[in-house]
Length: 267
Image 1 (cartoon, rainbow, N blue to C red):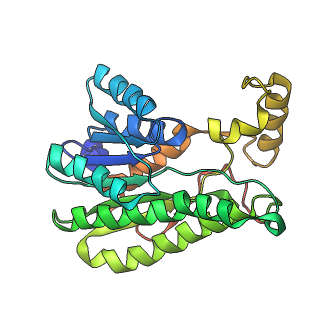
Image 2 (spheres, rainbow, N blue to C red):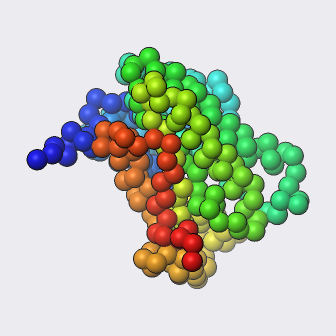
């Protein structure tokens, strides 16, 4: 018989999660903590990060909050240093932080390009660089980046976002080759439609409230893209992250993991 806790348990491991104040990042931080990891919750929203860390502590886990702008290299390095300084090392890094971009590529301005690339691409790269340095000194670890189903489907007005997530995917696979000899695994998620504030931005009224009719239409439309007739939730991505963070996935690196309800199946 196999010991499931030995395979999937994260006791005594240290994890950093960016974008941890909400959505997929929050679910990831909570799941990793539930599996026994000590988690640093990083986010530009410092108060939101503290709320998540506080909730984890209330349920008996170990967590710290750290405000970070991932587009700034030094801030990312300080985030990793917070984990290693508090708990002596780093075993798991989840680069979840990202921002959307809407509009046709023919109208894309340089400022918007720099803003989105700064968070989605540079932020992921900075995290991988600082995280890999910390992991190499302690014998290895697991890095999980987040791309999008946009890498598989050409959708009008999502070109810049898709471009950045394609870059994250190639970044991941190259790093998997470069860092494998150091015992560091690097994988990437390509989530499908997932109900978070990130996806709900198109469904809001001018006062910020969610339009219930538009919400229902959105959910119905997303369900139709899935053979399972489902739309994803943040926890669906978090369970996959748990697998990739754990020893159960010790033979997995450089792969694109698609929890998308089958939406990207060619048909």
